[in-house]
Length: 166
Image 1 (spheres, rainbow, N blue to C red):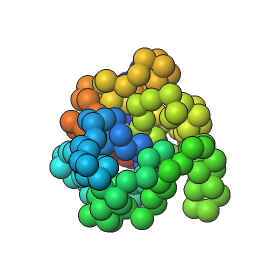
Image 2: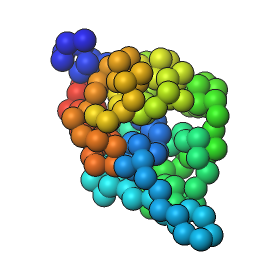
Image 3: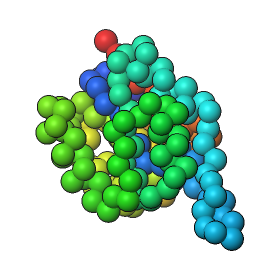
């Protein structure tokens, strides 16, 4: 898809949804003797969430297969209220969000990195992945970020959407 077509798609976006592990994090988890103790999030990605909201009134939501206190805390810090944890059927959650917010799939962007993200990637108007996403994902998304997951991929997507707004 050419750059102009990508900008048109990105210019229609009113909601950005993201996976967590491998997108907002580097796909690593820190474990202690009592289980998960934390994940590493990029501060730049957090600024992307803030800039989308401040400059374009575009909300960010999280849909992840994991259930993690670290994700809840990060979402709270970024004022993300559209938070869906432990989700096995991400497409079903997308459909519920579309109905509740009265949005069309063409108005939603999603960034994911692995095969469990494919059903939602195939539904949204603008799909993206980090540079280190699985090939099954990078082979079908509209936009492949230059940055890796947890290292600014979300921020890169956010800036592209911001710059593409009419």
